[in-house]
Length: 275
Image 1 (spheres, one colour):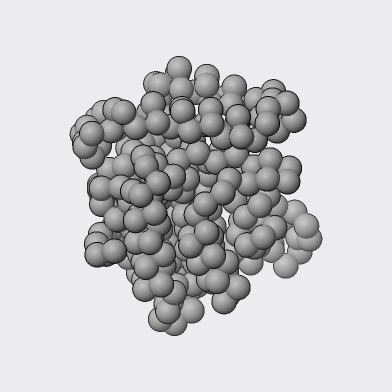
Image 2 (cartoon, helix red, strand yellow):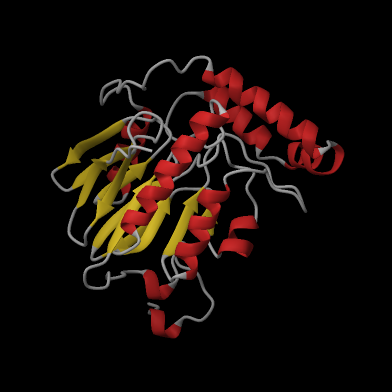
C-alpha cells in the first residue's frame, strides 16, 4: 500500500497527493459558473453580459479561494499558434487580475471552447481541463465537468465530438485556413445554433435529463457529494440520494447564475446586475 509521502511524481486518480483532501482557508469559498457564451448572439448582447460577469467576479474576489469556470465561456474559440480571438478584454483582464492576486482559477472546456490549448495556462496561469474530474474539499467529494458528450444517447453529437477533437480539424484550422476565414466559419456555426434559442432551456425531468442519468451511473460506482455541470443551461439542484446532489449551473444568458461552496454546503444562486 502506497501513501502520499512515499510517492514521487506519480499521479493517483488525476489528483496530486496534496489535493486528495483540501481544506479551505477560514472564511474562504469556492465559486462555480458556466456557459457565458461570450460573443453571442450579438456584440452588444455579449458586451453587456461580459460587464455583468466582470461585476460578479469583482464581488466574489474578497472571499474566493478557487473559481471553477465550467465550460462554454465563449460561443466559439480557436487558438492558433500565434493568434487568439479578439474581444473579451474586460473578462480576460479580470481573470488575469484575480489569478495574479492568488485566487486559483480552473477552466473546464466545453463543446464551444474545446479548441482552447495553452493560452490560458501560459498567459493567465489558469489550468484548463477537458474531461470531468473529481475533487475533495473539506471532506466533501465533487465531480465537476462541462457535461457535453456524457451519458447515454446523442450518438450523432458524440461522433461529431470525436471528429472535432481529432488532429485533422485542428490541422486544417491551424495550418491551412486563414484565421479570418476560420473565425468567420466558426461565427456562422454559432449564429445558426442561436436561431433555435428563443427562450431558456426547460428541465426535462429526472428520467429524461442525460446528465442526471450519468450522475446516477457514476454514483452507483463511486460516491460523490456533489455533481456539478453546465451545458444544459438549466438552473437546477436535484437530490440524487440522501447524500448526493446534482447541480446544473444554468447560464449567464437567462439566469446570471452561479454556485458557491462555503466549506460545508453548496448553494445555487442568481445575481442580476443592472449594467
